[in-house]
Image (tube, rainbow, N blue to C red; front, top):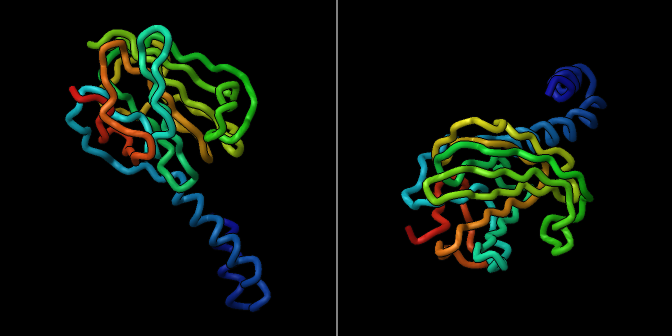
Length: 189
């Protein structure tokens, strides 16, 4: 932001500085847009979407859970939120690759795996880095208490978040549906 401001001021003296000011100002605007973090009023469903984005897949898991994968484009808000109230029982960083998050092979990408002890039992949430995203920033550690819709972390520059619904919880979203973190309900509760 300082570089954009400085080159904009210098362009008043010499128009040649405008060549630098224009892209720097656009880059600053893009970064401010990308790292926005709007306040939200939590939705009414039992399980809320942890991410802004589009439901990429809904997959039954062998253990009875259902994985809901939400792809976040660079245009989405990238602050992730707690899907339910509870206690964070673990936050584990898992090293890996950086394939595009919409690619099925992205299951081996770098990730942070969360487990929350909730009224529905253990909820697993996985923040997955994408091709451009190289940093996942958890805001909480094990032992922290969370409320529904509370900010839990950030994935920088495009990624995916998977949430595993417990056995017996039917998803209320469909593939291709847009979600809003902390607002859109993932279950019929």
